[in-house]
Image 1 (spheres, rainbow, N blue to C red):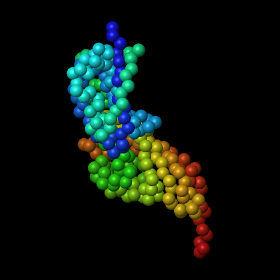
Image 2: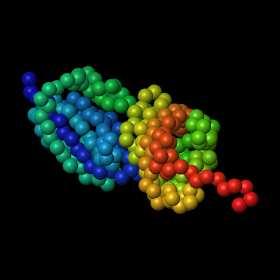
Image 3: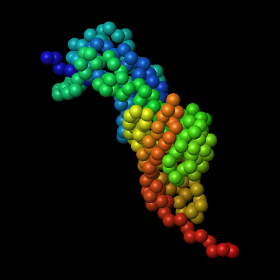
Image 4: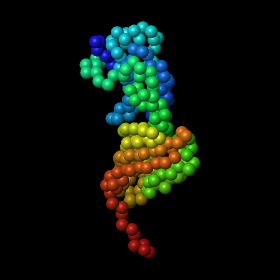
Length: 258
């Protein structure tokens, strides 16, 4: 039996292009070639701008056959759609396990073929919250949050797109270089779980100037529920104790009359 081979196409993709990349990948995967056993689109947890399109082929001969039949490999097209030119690596699969059978390889919604399209669409929607809204594009709030959105975080009473705009504006006023990094993202059913880290330099001088200029890093996890292409409900848990630890204690209140 011939050994399977794996191809990895990788490129750096700007955060604003992540949704377009995922959509282009779904289109390219709609017609999986017979020579391919499985395909995946993955994002580096350590370096979120690094994306890889991984394909497992039934054999090196099968890969060569596909290359002869395709003017441009299907895996290259999603990257080119967002202006990136991927680098190619080729590996021999020495211990195959869980290969996709011939009857399942063409179904993009099957577990073997990767994440179902609906889950990918939900992830792309949630990703816009971090890649666009929190980068200062406030208009995105109207596109991703439902009018009756409910957030269950008592620290941030945001319940509609307008309150999300106010929240983001307030945070970006305090941290002008505020930036979110998505460390991991998992979609299941109508929910998306995101593990994130935000970083920024504090501009606020309310603590007597002691905290201004400090580099702040906060990690957290958010769960978003999506209905009809909009986020309708959210839960969040962040390491705010780390924020307090980095800022230091608040200054004592001044006595009355001073």
